[in-house]
Amino acid sequence: MFVHSSTAELWTHGAVTCVLVPHGHNVDVELRNADGSAFLRKTAPNRQAALNEAEYLRLLLRPAQHVARTSELKPFALVIEDDADNRDALSEALKMTGMRVLGCRSGAEGVALALELSPDLVVVDHRLPDLTGAEVCRQLRNQPQTATTAIIAVTAAPEALRSEGCDADAVLSKPCQLDTLIAAARLFVRELGSPADPSA
Image (cartoon, rainbow, N blue to C red; front, side, top):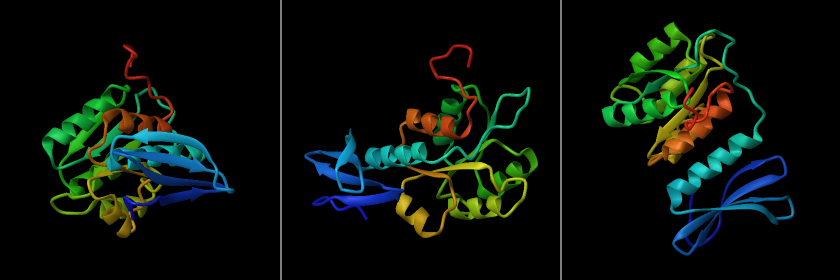
């Protein structure tokens, strides 16, 4: 749990620990060695941005587990989000990297589409009209064709999502900067281009 008056440890990977440190109106994200010394510090303007920065750093330290299929087709993403504006924004951000993207508004529809189409990446909201994002993740992980599909959850309630045992590969906090989503997507789908790349 994040505490404004003191540091808050978020995760540990090997000998590296990630902590949030309040710093005036900002929040510092620090990676610390086993002896407690900080070897990397990034300043974020608020708690949500700090949590997303910490999640991105966690992903960078993990070995690559998801690689897009070798195919003539561009990598494919499925966005499961009931808010049309958010769904469009997330879809457009992923299209900027060169992905093919399909969006849907309910968890059940998303699970059915994922099982039918085998996407390289699933982006799912936590609060959906029928299922939670955690339940969507559970259903996808329990099916052989989607068990190893990369899943990014985007939610305004990351603690609630994790408390439900969400099995997403990454949990990004809303409001989420689209470049944060793009950076996270690139960690899972290696063929993605840069948003600045006109050929993408």
